[in-house]
Image 1 (spheres, helix red, strand yellow):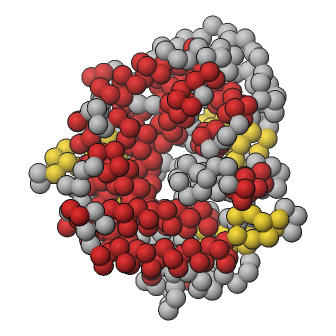
Image 2 (cartoon, one colour; image 1 turned 180 degrees about the vertical axis):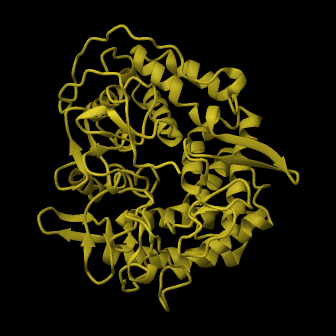
Image 3 (cartoon, rainbow, N blue to C red; image 1 turned 135 degrees about the vertical axis):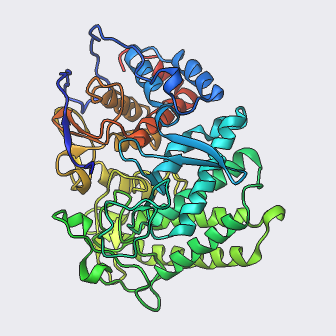
Length: 479
């Protein structure tokens, strides 16, 4: 079993200064910027459009280390994690996370998402994305409550003894709202880029009805629903209290998420960022199934009814008055008036909401909450000798996730903040040439997950967006 929490000690030493000042000048020692990508013959998939984008963006980057990081990271999902084939006449793409040989619905969408702008230029890449959507459809139909799956539907999980309805082919069965939101986001994004509705067939529609049914069950209007989860473990965040159903909630329209996107158990079961993500993707479902080619009034009506209920719950319970900071977005609530205030590095987080389209980046409510998240008022915001950023319980105290720094840059409307984030990321990859799951706030050579494709590809997406929106930042040699 590969632990997601075990720190890897890297023997290389990097210089790390105080990173609280946005613009810091430093000298670059001689380094070997030889590509860290697998040899061409060993790459899982090569996209001509993505390769062309890498060349184009690299030409805009003045800092050689940043250009090297981008070239290593952006294609990492395609280079190392995808398994494409045709099954029963349909494209099928299995996507592992990196060092864990399983496919998460969340991670697989997030890993592929940055390539969507290129699918019109590359038919092979378009088929690869269609294959991910088809594979995710199969996963949902197997079990909408599971978060991670194997390619082999007969494979038995290392978590087979979890007290929940485990089936062959399921790696882990942690119920997380976002697990069902992400496939909708990918399907909608694919359609927006291509106009192609051919893959939204009977199976896809059945899976979407199942998504709506699962969301409805977890509003818990009438009972606790069919899902519960318990695990024999020393990790408190892997277990669910009170018989595996979690702490009580008062039904209000919001959807229970037993686990967070980090795969950690929620404290209060109405996880607000994930409910806001659900509101957004329910709108996507309504648009998709209003298209003449796949029109389904029943599905649209169910999605609309659910969206209205979740919105009402959000307005009544999810926006709270903090005793010191005023009106903000809560992280978790229970419907009884209790709220939990923090943010986690995994997406959806409160910080990432504009990236997911769930709120505008200049929305006053978001900005007020963002200020809290990026301060000592968030118990999982860390500042140290190596950098600053958001972590979470999953990797323990004093650990910062590069993903949070990347999302901070992507959702920022301040050039100095984006520059600062790029600078931190440059100095915390521990000379590996890749992003990691987390690093220690005082020593970036202590990190988790050497091969974490989501963080790598997301870093590449950030650089691409910067090249479009703030190209002058990439022309600065000193980061």
